[in-house]
Amino acid sequence: MTDERGVTHLTWPRIEELVNRIAEEIGDDGAPQILVAVLRGGGIPAVWISHKLRLRDVRGVEVTHTADDSTNAAKTPQPVAVNAASLGDLTGRDVLIVDDVAGTGHTLAAAVKLAADAGASRVRTAVCVVNEDNWTGRLPAEATVTYIGTTTRGWVVFPWEGNDEHEH
Image (cartoon, one colour):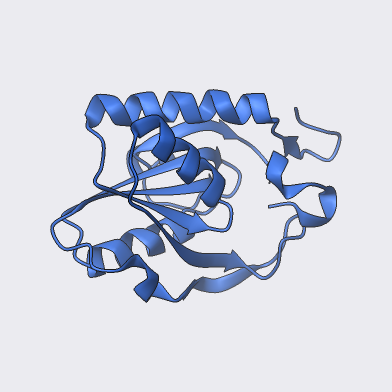
């Protein structure tokens, strides 16, 4: 549901629908060996997808591209990775990177680079939502993100964020 400020508020049932769709598409392409959550927002959908795919190897890496969690927060010049070593050795592995939302696409691209640098032989990406207003990729999101739950325009608030003070 989009409010008068152009903010889309997603519900748990809507997230479940998106995760189910994404998991089905991933299953059709073959389950990855390792799932990587882009923390914090990608943690919940990543764990949910891991259960759907019966995948136990779930890792996390923090990559941020906003100054804070407020609505329409300023972007940092480049995505910032915290503790990239948390990915571990991905040599020769099929990796799926999961995040809640792709705005510019830069955070996801940074996470893909981290996985490739850690040795992943195949890297796919999945997001619940692409914010088309912010997308700056050279190619359309559909050509860049492997699995997209849905697209929207404007800020997105996820049910795990609680209230408008912590919109993402």
